[in-house]
Length: 242
Image 1 (cartoon, helix red, strand yellow):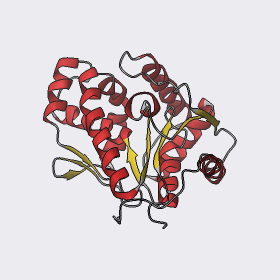
Image 2 (image 1 turned 45 degrees about the vertical axis):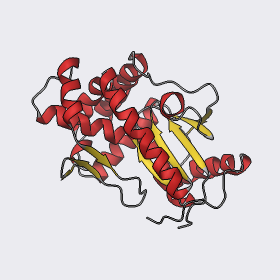
Image 3 (image 1 turned 180 degrees about the vertical axis):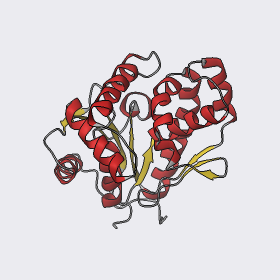
């Protein structure tokens, strides 16, 4: 892949199930940039909470677990690694138990404070080493990287998002039904949009991109057009390689 072609930060925000992760990883790989899945970090803290036997609705206890949790994540878009302590938990954090609890855990202000600092450190490191990074989540353009060179808010109908999530679950060996997945998608939308700490909402200067009727290639093409319109391609200052 091209090394260090992206200059700066691309922020990809949007609700669950709209293809952010797939788009962000492929975009980062295409541009030789770093990649950060902030949602995986919240899922890892959620797993730590569940392993500790804590109630995800108990903010004080969740905060205590989060302060002790050793969460590490790579910024390589091709070989992403998510660790909790010494355990590689990349598969476990996608399970149903974590999915049902992650909105409650991620709404805890202390959790967001802790992960925000870590995320901003990872972003700075990737930009220094490789020139740029693609970051995906719920509050990247508003809270984590408000000065991002390009902010995109990905949307899609709840029906389309449920279908994509169900297909992804099936491909990865998880059992789910379309109706149950749609209910979960809409539940997470309500929780993520109504939380007090960094709610899901587009940045004022974000570009809205509805992916309901677009495939991954179509979404990537549109984003790359925006990258070129803003002249964000160039040779990175850092010589690092993945």
